[in-house]
View 1: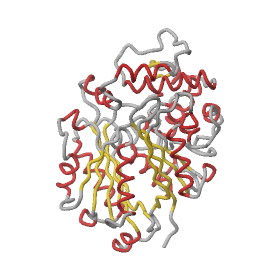
View 2: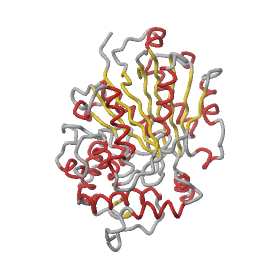
View 3: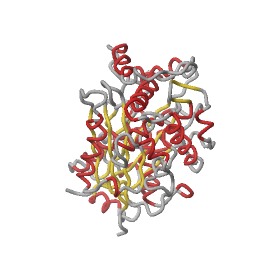
Length: 416
């Protein structure tokens, strides 16, 4: 079966864009990806368009991809609309990858775009209410809160202002880990502060101001043990990738010098596991499958981007990806292993906490970073000698874990 390559990537800044529409953000990312690949819209034979919030916020419930892409010249080809909560953009990439592997075409595009920010605060957070079963919201909430029920919540450590219900999810996971493994709030602050240090070098990141560990700890609370800088912001943005197989490389007359090979692309959905059965967490299972497909292991990875909707997400995923033992994620972060210059730099982009989190674009934002890292194009945040990278992107909630997760493993190609 032919190898699949990413030959072009584009990404807008992830921030608040009050003067740009979803269509304009999409255009900026797509035009950049095409230019990066050195090709044109007419060269693309299929497109997979990811978006989550446009229907809820703007009323564009249907044909979002066609509305965004047809004016850009992507006419007459299959345009497939994709939604998979925060894993939407990775799902678009996964579908483009398998479409190419099937031989259905030789050049495809994956796009993710979302405009989350609105002055209507209720509307701004309301989209997250549909990322779990809307028929059983109280039951969903009880199931999640039960995970950390034996951990005392200090007075004054929960915000009186509205926040995403997913912060309760991550806080409950954190309290489970406090109870089960003894992780600390300070360890979460170490992760958040590290991501701010990384983001200072990322011109596309929403928050580039460096914060100390103590500043993170003493920031306004969201829900214990999470403070504001430990949590991802509301963001707008778009990202895109041009993929091709070996036939596509030849048709576009491209070498493999700047191409990045997709060595594995794995998706899993949740199972009805118990909350403390972490060995069967869907990300751990998906990562194991991806490593097997790629013929690689955790020790082979040079750089990593994970879905840190909160600092707790990064702590959990560092364990699920096999970089440290279960329960050691906090100590691993404190050791400096996840810093630039460490054993396995995690989220050199700044992660969702600092880079931003426009949910329909997030996964391809991670891919943009990893492709740039493998090409050696990241300037002061460059991971020296990076040749292999791994990405984890999750979305939604079912039971006690994410509804869906994607693991991608990517490799730097040799010049040809």
